[in-house]
Amino acid sequence: MILDKLMPDPAPDFNDPLGLLLACHQRILSRCEMLEKLLPHIAEHGVDSEARSTIRNISQYFSTAAVHHTQDEEVDLFPALNRQSLKLADIVYRLHKQHAELQALQDRILAALKNSSTLPDNADFADAVGQFCALYREHIKSEEKELFSIARHILSSQQIEDLGDAMARRRRVPR
Image (cartoon, rainbow, N blue to C red; front, side, top):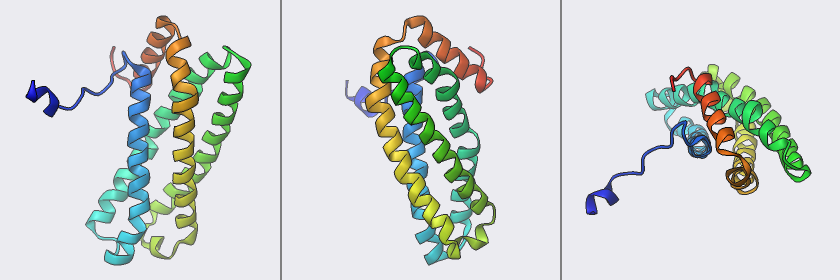
């Protein structure tokens, strides 16, 4: 039907935890684009209502949903995959190290966003944003290409269900 093509695909839910993690990647990339556009916007318009709204959106997302996403991977997904093979253990180790780097950059960014009046002259913020977004893009590409495709094939239906349950509990969503 024509109408079916006009309607977006339903968002993944906790029954498809890997799909949910992939959807979260798209939201993270969206926030990276917002971050990259923020400084040029502020340079042209100052810290106006649009900039303040963007800052709130970015800060809220990286303080809540992105934290849950990282916990989903670190606490539940990575340990399940880490035990499968040495190759996966190496991939998980590298991704874990990237999570630590991303967290340090995220902390710098969120600290700078708290005092938005200093953003136009904050070279450290601009540098952190550039590093953060580049690393996140690389990280997501690696996770999706190297880890998630394998996870879909080797995790049992019970492990997938357990992952979805853990993700729902983390967000205090009944299942």
